Length: 409
Image (cartoon, rainbow, N blue to C red):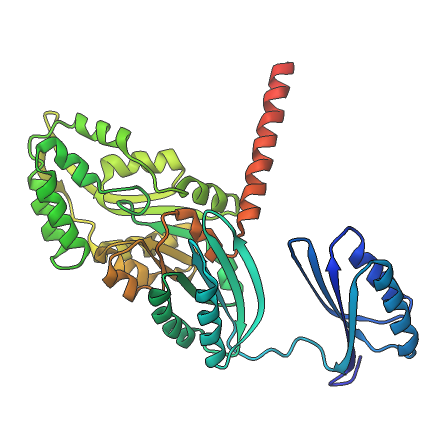
């Protein structure tokens, strides 16, 4: 195949899927001594679409007859199209556009794909990442600058009520190795300081200040000192009660378990309190943790913080420090958060994800996820729901085998 633009033959087979279809077609093509240039296969509800791009044989008529006979025996339809070139010269500007909906309506997909077409881009491949509890679809797009496409689609995302993530295609998407998460209302449901405030009888007042701080209306450090002061006199044992009442975000354990299998490392950076976050890190197998420390004297909270406050700037510094300690670049980090104090951290990361975030944070972040399942993040990293479930099933089987072996001894 020394020609700059070799002549090729596209063989497209469609019909009911069954074992051996691909092998049968390839065996038929092998009789003509052709070279395989490219191959694509899709199965939807047991309907197969198989495309094979091969070099044109010397006796094309004989090949057409053999392929037609094979298709007839398989009770499938076949088309042959002769042309020039292979399938490798796709336009520059390649990206992954991940669409997440619950539900994902055809109306939304129609408008998203129309926007991609209007941008002069082409959808080269479509892959389903998950079918429940959300539907996640990954579009492989070429021919448009990823940054421009992200800006254009961000407007559509809010209007259509779906989540859209645009990421440049390449090794970086597969190479993310450090996940840095906020804690309150991200890794866990609710705010720890509000749970503590309930023990002091001032939950409503503290919640109002928290909300203003998360929206970025007041300085985080100032708001934290104000809220913590209201906790003066609360027994330190309240921290144990709060920890016992914590509820992880749905999918949190699945996300951590799945990505740890792939060698990812994890960090939590919180404007909350180390007396809670350190225990959370130990429970989940988190590698790094940083948070504020509540001062405790004679078994009671003093209403003060020990040391510097972990504020917006400190969160970004922590991400950079943890990346160095983990031996990865800042570009190989993923940050997840929901509040204004997470903005610098999201901007510093290779991929910043606003998770069920305040409007100002959603507008500023590269990617916004607004479904209540933290494990949705794995779909943005190219991991499918089926792969997650298969790995979990394999681990369960291994654990059962180990238990049987222990019982036998």
